Length: 393
Length: 193
Image 1 (tube, rainbow over the protein chains, first blue to last red):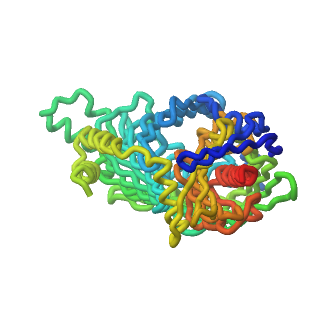
Image 2 (cartoon, rainbow over the protein chains, first blue to last red):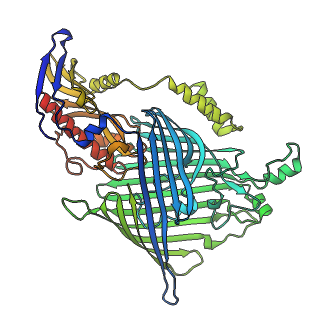
């Protein structure tokens, strides 16, 4: 900050006020100049590219090279209180999704009204999924198979921050999964993943409720508890007579109740970071659902991971971070099954990932990791080498 | 807990009946309208009361020119027995970028959200108390953590993040802007003294 050129003091005798004038030509940084006349429009982007190479001594294995996702953010601030935000995603270069598109109306820190396509606040990565925010080339598989990231639905609710109590909360009423569209969309292998609707002409009969409480009152520690409760949609109800009890009971058997609870913690002591997450989903009416649809969805789905990472600053005066990490994941989409379904132990999976991220700038990361994968029926781990980069600006 | 609260919980947890719960949500939210923002002045007084617990103090406006109003929002000297014993400033700093946080010192700051804080300085311009007054952004709210803010007490800007104060996980950008802004505010008060 350069020196202030002129200082003039005027003593105002009345009211005992001291008025001070500074020369307005004082050199302000760009930050200050723009501050007074803040723009309304914001644009941003993130993306990630992956290379996955299965390593097998005996066979040829084709690797996979994928521009996994490129995202455009567009935001607009209507005034101090009202803001629109959207996240439009190109996945694998040829699929388009709207991952977020909501309006946030702020009354104060404690109460914000939010409506539109909203991320379900479950676990860490579903909400904070930009590639510079998590370790490893791919998102944790617990955040793919147990929490079906990027999990978003249309709805409304409120969120806010209680600073004194060190609590942030979110509570939304959202559209739920669609478990039946002529065929089962829930499955033993993929759990809930293929039943997401995401505001794409979604079927809506019953709302689901989801919420998260983040407590940051402990030193260096963030604890978050999430919940989701709802019943799935089914295409069988549409157009049914309200007194057609036979057809209704048939439709009822395509509906599954879903209750998910999650707990995640982050502990950051200077350069060392620990992150842990555990998610349990309980599903009801799966016996009828499986009998009717021929699916094999579980009654209980469990997953979790623990990760330790460390940040090295490689340059003293410049930004260059190296972040080695190790993560253990366990996830079982057949943790508990009803009596008519045979438990498939191949759905109980564990992984160990060892890798490193190199950040030449806060918004750019090169990633490499080695992933060991095994199911409960396998004796040995299979290995995959993952390389990739991600950016965020 | 008001009847409305109870009604909301009942609707959400026990008796979710079509869109009823949704409208109750709207009702609750509109009921909250009436609380509105806490006035800056009131917030400043609250912080001062804590900072100067056992003294009778009087705060006097230090008027700042328009060009500085955006950052030096409201500046007061705090007088005890007619002598200046400190300063209090309600200031605004940049937080995260709308939709995320990636790039500090981005030349295009138009896209950044802002947050408000209240800083109380001692006579020698060491920090006496620091509180976040408003944090509208959805990223970086961890800077409101009390134990992190307490680190600033007794320290005199110019400060350096990671050297004089720890970083805060999940709020790297907001923390950086806050430290920068404190340094700026301190230097401004210094030149106004």
